[in-house]
Image (cartoon, rainbow, N blue to C red):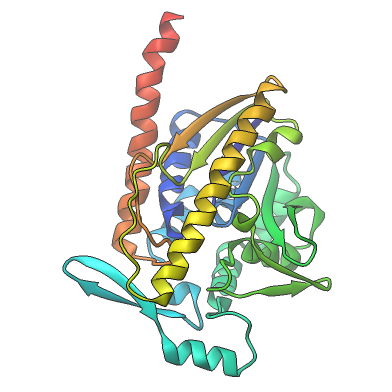
Length: 302
């Protein structure tokens, strides 16, 4: 069984979309299992339906307003770079209304509902393909995997939304007496889960570089410090997930094909810039094309 695994990474998901487009349309990869975390969970349903143009349109036209109904930060352009700072009024308003998070992402839930229709959902439920997304159960201190075929349309849409909620900057969701948040807080790259579900060949799209290429600039304010800290922790989680995935693959005769981002795309994946994300999608496609052109001659010699 072939599986496509897409890591978390916020706006960097546009790069993953470009890679997946090449794998599906040009290499004709026939995946039976699609597993995504956070931004990956937004992609996998549409990729399984082969509705690539539809999800590409979403990723290349999205804005911060498409995600947040209460945005906790402001972005300032200075000397050609983007600097983020706390939106004090929005954060204060959110706390006064009883929220536990700096911002709220109800708009993202609406975007998911508008993008994944009930007919799309039913087509996937009746197909032979499995779609699984990752969420973090903060109350029980565990990672959970939600399979599309186990839920109704409304339930699955909410789980996709939960998987993308990068707390404390986005909404915290309470379901079944438990608090849930972004799947990346527990498992950024669910390779192990794909293999445990029977995958023998896994294409894993990783939205960070294979070798550390980032030297973070000094924090300018409390908000940038917080995002840097979370970025550091998620990078460590991702590295651990990859090591575990490789170990499990070696013990289950499974093959993993890695597609790492070749360069650092952004240091803040909560910023959704239409122009940059359009470029990242194209770069992802070209990267996958280049990578497979390099591999093919070697395969022909074997």
